[in-house]
Image 1: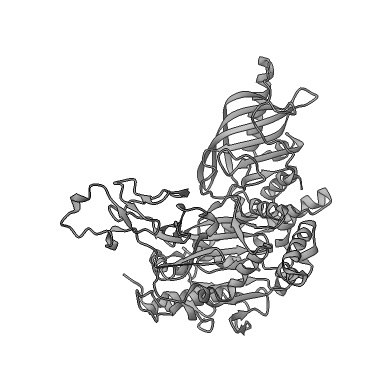
Image 2: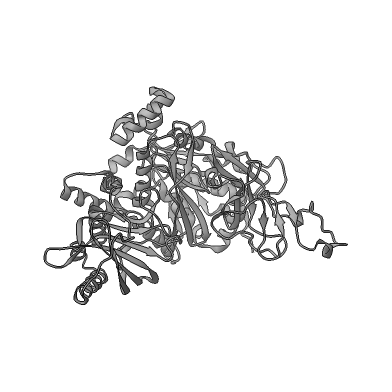
Length: 452
Length: 178
């Protein structure tokens, strides 16, 4: 049974959402079809597939896909399925398949865009509809693939806005991440962590801009960092990045939360002119950027002091420390996070050292910060299974957020604007299922904030 | 930053052989058993005291990872970070340690590999680790200890490297030391 649009619409109120959006497997299945089946989803970075035949497996919602580099330099995204018996053609992970894909079951082969190449003993198919040009004999390509500054996204729907339109204002975070390199390019480097959370994927998105949780949930880690700093008489980088969560409420209230269409946004837009010269690593970085872009632009690039950015459906880039936490829904109560770290091409080595340290300390499975997050997400998942109430509150600073040309902005940094914005997009997707091959279908472009 | 000091010798390949008396070998074995027991009993203050001032704790993210400087690691901790971890798990508001992580380390197959360039003893063992926090988890791998001899005839840990069989897996959080 499929939930009616009326039932789905009733789950998102301007100030709250029904708990079933986190716990109902049927809603999860619909999300896979209606959100992950049409939105542009980040599949990986071009630097992960440098040479012809290099591939990287990942998932778009519940779909196993392969990102692969073809001989003409193009990056393709195809479903990981052989059209013969359905076997996954490549194993999970990264590798190089050479000049073509070859299924390990019966040696059907495919070009790197998935199209049929050959199969053994073709005479056995004589008199059938077998034809290399028949798509039934090819690996299926994902409907649309596009790249923004090396970040590869794919959409399973042939219709809908183009990638740039979809990203809207949030593209500025990808721009800033790239511009932190003096040549404007980044590459995935140092390896990827994968961490499992026992909670619904939306809980993590909401938490990314939840400024009210930091000093409560993270008390154990910021207190530990502060005690240690007191003991050793200094607060080095390793401790500083744990200490921040302990800022008083006044600090968080002053931050700016930006919300863009389609559920995107970022936290903290206050320009920080001191960021460029605060510490030795930043000073060296600033010098390299000044040479490349001139002092004013360099100051502007490093002063763009964004904390978590949200690209709804894909995950959360962190521009200042060059991370991308890619969020992969696994089931209604399981979410897998892939943490990528980027090297800024041409930047001093110490900038990558810092990114690696940040990944190890904050985003690794052994992080001292993350376990308390993961614990409270799980408690939400379990608490929402009880009969102790049906609604989840999004009331904070409702009605005070201001409209901007490309979205909305909070007037108080503890506003639950980001969650309201995410659920406005959610509702828009869920009420407008992807329709195949209707060229004027633009459902997801207008994920309005006014709707919630 | 101590963590970025590339002069720290993370190699566990011996450059010279080591010959230990049966009694000395027994001492090394007992030292490893005691280390495991301190972790299992969450006697973290005593565990922290087993290390040299510049000792490093390393759990690589990759099989055959050459060093912790070019690639990410599951753990890469100096004294300060080991202390922070202990402070966190012992904090009263450690939501993710309610209930606590309980563990049973089984240490076996202890072999003396030889000496490193600074004369530290390299010891290899195999670890089977059962962890429980709400549900059970099984971890296993090869552990390399580099040990410095102390004046009183004992040992201190210069490097503990744990090569997990599933280091490249998807993980739930790793909250306490392996």
